[in-house]
Image (cartoon, rainbow, N blue to C red; front, top):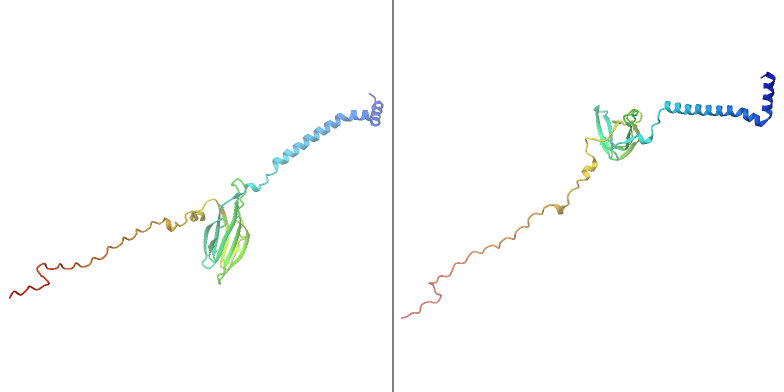
Length: 212
């Protein structure tokens, strides 16, 4: 086919819609198919490369929070366990954890606890000095700093050597009615009166008559 004939057919296809659609239809379908395949490949590659975002449901709620505290005067550091919603006194501070969350071992460690700390003042009043989140991986980020005592979070635990407070509540004191009663005192026998001597049978109140 000569060049002039090809040019003429192209011009006719450009001005005649039915021929233009017939000429462009196979090309359009191929382009659409290629675009779909490319888009699907891009989405699959991005999903494979992007790390899975941790969901809130993956965090573990623990019943025990483990704290560490230091007495700045003596330099003594101790660790202590506190059950959720229970209060433990460390020096002049009262520590109350409200929640304690951790992550599974397969994920990056992240342990945090929402804690309330009160101070017992010299005049025996309670003053709130801290309310907020503590982070075990960054103890200095949000620790409690006191003139004498410092407290920070060490971790969250499922069990503790300290018995839970419910164990003490589960064994209430027995009522008095359950106690065995003391045996009733037996009535005392009446005191015996001393026996009176029996009258002498040989004696008689009347004097013998005088026969003379």
